[in-house]
Length: 256
Ligand code: HEM
Image (cartoon, rainbow, N blue to C red; front, top):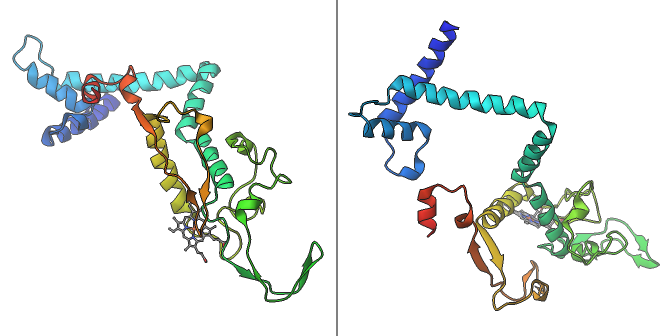
């Protein structure tokens, strides 16, 4: 035990020394060790100055407290469930469904890149000769009531427990296209939507101006090679973080 104790103290001393050598200018970047060092400096001449050993014990307490909480959690499955729900929230699972549903109703590219038919075929009694240019309307497919329940309704929940993906294998849902010419930018596009959207939602509540009701928002689209809103979207951003009780005094001051 003494050996382990010494090792831990050596690691912690290294961490403290690192922090001593790089003092942070901006207090917003400070971590626990920076704060402890500041307290140590401020109480240098006091009756009970903070020693490096005190600091090491405080840091070690933090780790111990952290591990004890998690073992308590195993004993209390309800608590664990609650924590898992929060984790899921952090993984933005519901937000992903929201984005999927938005892409179903409003695919950025309503018409896929035209294809050419390789052989003659018949669709609904229509003769399609070989080498016909075929335009696939992803927009209409995403709203087809034969494949979607309440097709015109915005319902992200429809993707919960659903295996439908936009990887080009579920032909009722092709916002990124399908086949050899499907969009190669999915892995870049999704985080670029998810992360800014998550930030905007986390930091602000969004309200419509002029006492407009939510259901009055016009979702008309401007049609073209890519689709956007027909009318600009005006929203009022209300800072949520300033109301949160757990904010540090510094952040509260910045908000006000
Ligand atoms: C939400 C975002 C995006 C959507 C909905 C989207 C959708 C599409 C669609 C429907 C196609 C035509 C696929 C087909 O005809 O089968 C396409 C093609 C393409 N996309 Fe995207 N895209 C997005 C973002 C991006 C990004 C971020 C990039 C690049 C970083 C990208 C690069 C391309 C390229 C290069 C093609 C042409 C592929 C080819 O013709 O072989 N896309 N995209």
